[in-house]
Structures are given as C-alpha cells and as structure tokens.
Image 1 (cartoon, one colour):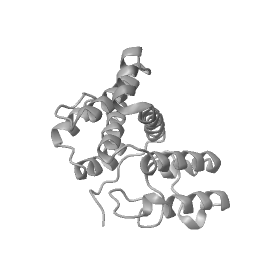
Image 2 (tube, helix red, strand yellow):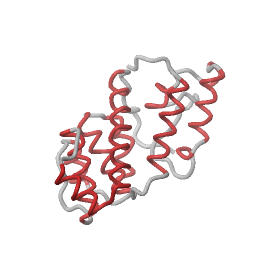
Image 3 (cartoon, rainbow, N blue to C red):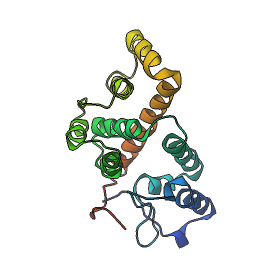
Length: 194
C-alpha cells in the first residue's frame, strides 16, 4: 500500500493541477501507451503521483524524464535496456512493469529481460554500440564511475553525448526507483491496459 494519498484531479490545488496537466498532456500521453498514467478515476499512477507532493520539484523531475525518454540520441532498445538495468539494480518492480513491455516491443528477448532482472549483463546484444552503452550503465550502477579505460572505450564507441545521456538516465531512474521504494508504490494488479 502506498504511503501517499492519491488525489483525484478535483482535489488538486493549482500547483498540483498544473503539474498534473503537464504530465497527462505531455509526450507520455501521446501515441500508444504501455503504462497507464492515470487510473479510472484520473489519479496519477506510479512515480507521477509522488511528484504532486512538491510540484516545483515534480515539474523539474518530470521534465527531465520526458527529455530522457523523447529528446536524447538513445534508440529505444538502448534506452529500455538501460532503464531495466537500473530497475534490476534497485529491484524496482514498478519500473520493470512499466518498461519491460516497451523493451519487448523493441525486440529485447525474455532471456535478456531475465538477465536484467538479476542485474546481470545480457548476452546477444545487437551490436558493439549497444554492448558498450549497457556496459557503461552497469559500470555506473556498480561503481558509480567510469575508470579511464571504460570512459575511453565509451567515448570512442558511443561518443560523449551518449555517455552524458546515459549518466542522466541512470541518475533519473535511480531517483524514481528510490522514490517508488520509499513511498511503497507497487505495480498495478492488472496486466496491460486498453
């Protein structure tokens, strides 16, 4: 059971409502959704509900997440593999629930998903860039850093921009995993949604 109230839209103050509208009207709400942003009563699901506790920080956090999801050079496979590596490290069932379907749609296999759940490097990655990106993510999660050799390999294989984007992704999803844990947010009981 979550430790936070889950207000319906009518119970939100002006700052909360502005954040709610940004989340439900932004890029996450466009196109096919593998994760419902709201329940049947309009209450925000997952990490987004927690953002209502502090709307100024919630705006910044959701904006960072939207940029990571929709404005980076990370292709969908690399992005979802990286997110699921963070979820595996933090044992974040909610993030696994939300991102495994997207990863499957991008061609990530059940064996690769199982490895990520165990925070183990998957085999049979698509190419050297994907392998290097995921090795970078694992080093960040395991060591909190890239040694000189790992950094040099990452820059020569995927470039500084992608290294920067991956560090932002790791930090953002680790923040969400921590918040989901502290506020006791579990995945919804139903599987899938319309």
